[in-house]
Length: 117
Image 1 (cartoon, helix red, strand yellow):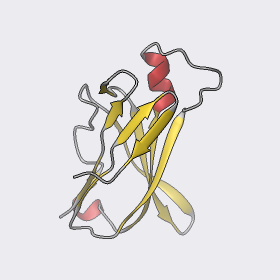
Image 2 (cartoon, helix red, strand yellow):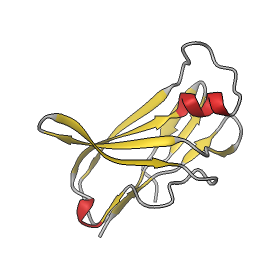
Image 3 (cartoon, rainbow, N blue to C red):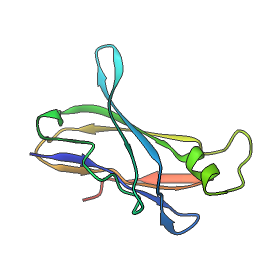
Image 4 (cartoon, one colour):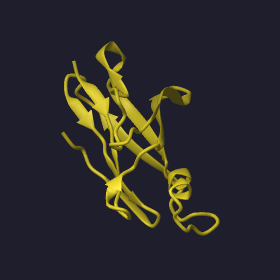
């Protein structure tokens, strides 16, 4: 069976994004429903897959990373409101037998993602 994982890299510090709150939502008929919560570890990774096994369904998903809270926590100087606060990534899962890895590379001024392995 497939799985969904993530990790965060703080590109402004050249370090893992440790302690970042992550929420995962699945799209349904009535909008997005919260299906998982996690916090990144010292390596910037969630210690377990966000979804796997029978819970890993095809469909549209939304990952939300609390980047602004993280940057405030590590002492970054941010404007009020911050330019990058909650980072929302919408993506689709078509193959439930595959590994979908959705990393976030983030700084107080930018972010990017890709489908990793």
